[in-house]
Length: 281
Image (cartoon, rainbow, N blue to C red; front, top):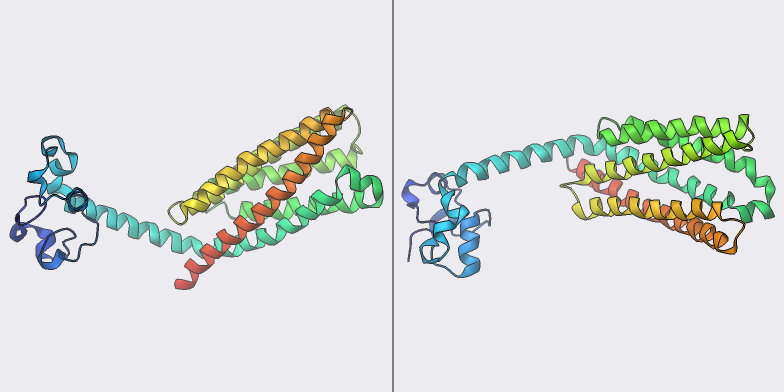
C-alpha cells in the first residue's frame, strides 16, 4: 500500500509533521477531514493512490499537489476573515432587518385598502391610505439607507425609495393625482420603485452569500416575480376598459399581496440568521 494518496513522503510533508494532515492514510490524518481534494478523489474512485489512476498524466489536482497545503491554508485564512466580517455586520443587520419586517405589514394593509374595488366601496380610506404609504416609504427608505455600509445596493434602494416619496407627494398632494403630468410622475415613480426593489432584494441576497446561499437565491427569484406582478398591474391599468384588463389588475394585485407575504417570511428568516450569528459573540 502506498504511504500517501498523492505519492509524497509523509516524513517530508509539512501537513503531516505539523499534525494537521487532512488526507494521509495513517498517522495524524487517519481521521480524514475531507479538505484534501486528492484524498477525496482517490477514496471516491477506489484508488490506493494516484499512481493507479489512468488520468494521472493530465490531472490538475496531482500536478498541483506540492502547493496544495499552502492553498488550503490560504482558503482557511480567507474563510476566517469572512467569518469575522459576517460576525461584525450581524448585529446591525439583525436589528434593522427585524424593523423592516414589521414595516412590511403596513404596506400590505395599504395594498389592500388602496385597491380600486375597496376604494369604490369605502372611499373614505383614500387619504388614510395615502398617508400610510408615504409614511411607510419614508421609514423603509431611511432604514435601507442606514444599512448602506453593509451593501451598496441598500444605499441605492433607500435613495430611490425616498425619491419616490417626493414624486408621489407631488403627484397626489400638489397635482391631485389628475392630468398628464401626474401620470408621467406616477410612471416615473413606479419605475424607480421597481429599481429600488431590485436593489433591496439583491442587497439581502448579497449579505446572505456564504451565510445561507439558498435564501440568497430566493431573494433574487423574488425580484423576478415582483416584476411580473407589477407588469400585470400596469398592463391591466392600460386595458382597464376591457374585461381582460380587469383580470390583469386583480390578478396582479393579489400576486403583489402574496409576494409581500413571501417578503415577510424571507425578512424574518434573514433577520433571525443574523440574530443567531450575533448571539454567538
